[in-house]
Image (cartoon, rainbow, N blue to C red):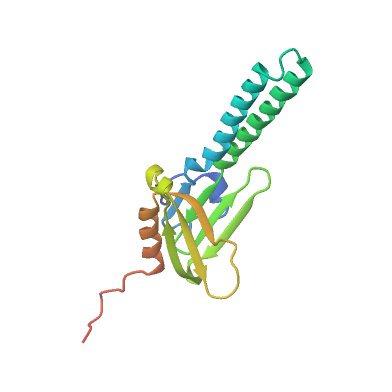
Length: 179
């Protein structure tokens, strides 16, 4: 987890979405867990295996078929590189006022939910998530659908959950007399 406080350098792709009042407070900025890339990696690896098998069996002596098979695999590799680049610029941002998720490489999408609108928040972890260290946040709010409802592949879910709950439910001030 990376805590970004005033004076630290926040990524420019995150900083441009912060309000002036938020840039003066604690900001938690994390990328989604790299496990989000497991499925694309498996597709690339599976494509390599299929291309290799087709090269050694079906396509022997068929130059055009070999060319198509390997160009298809190269297209899958380019798609994988694109997914990695998208992951690299994707951030989950938690401030004292709201929760943001900035995604997209070419078309930037920023989903936001004010913390004051969150009525319930939970997280869940699959078996693979527990093994690899990621989880999913489920946010609920009263009323209409929100732009930010589920955030998958969150790293350090327990620590982030406690941080967000601390922002949602701040401890009461102890300055007064309870009598």
